[in-house]
Image (cartoon, rainbow, N blue to C red):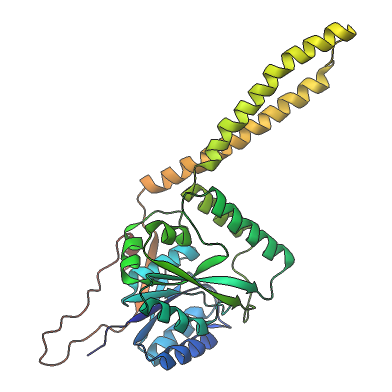
Length: 337
């Protein structure tokens, strides 16, 4: 009889061919030493290198490794969501496969969970192997999110965390498309605690989050948990209106005092018009981002499409009344057959 896992580790994978075997080795060493019953859910996010082949080989060697393979690349946050959908453990650990988040931290998370914490998030005390720009932009991002969002998102935390089954079930009900899982985890509440760790250099390969994706991710975080960008519009309009009202007596006084027009020529008018137009276009862009997100939701498309799942179905022991766990398709997903 297949034993139900206590801990599920979820790791999204996108073109991580040089890392997969080392990631599995370190993860299995850590989890076997912990004494917990565990499983590893690898989500192939449309990789076009040999990642899928290597993951399938791991599954064939170790039935605790389950592989969910997407039909195409649906993005990191959707891959994490798929992993949570397919996870069977009483607690779920989210970790990237690049080994920047060391698996050796997981036993500390499990200990905190055993003490009664529903969410144990990892706080980056140090970030090795990252450029000055990366460190400063990340620091600015986390503090900006902390100040303007409507939920208390801990500073310097990523998706590396352990969540109790109750938290995972709550998150699985939330099928929004522009996902920011660390914010969603804070939003659902429950008892949460952090542990500090040193984030390591990438083991091999290239980062999957270039500047363009980082900016998009930041925009998803801000628009998903804050109305502050929309509120800026009214504040800016009030400031501009105040400047316009105050300018009338100032211009009139200067005209009477000097007998000359303060603003002459078309250049000044053109500059003012261009400035106002830039403000308007910026605010239209912000409103468009919120409208686009509404459009994403009303289409009701699945968050991801699964092409293959490599797993061994649980079998009840002979003569027992055990019922195999359900293998129904998670809500909000779609499978190609």
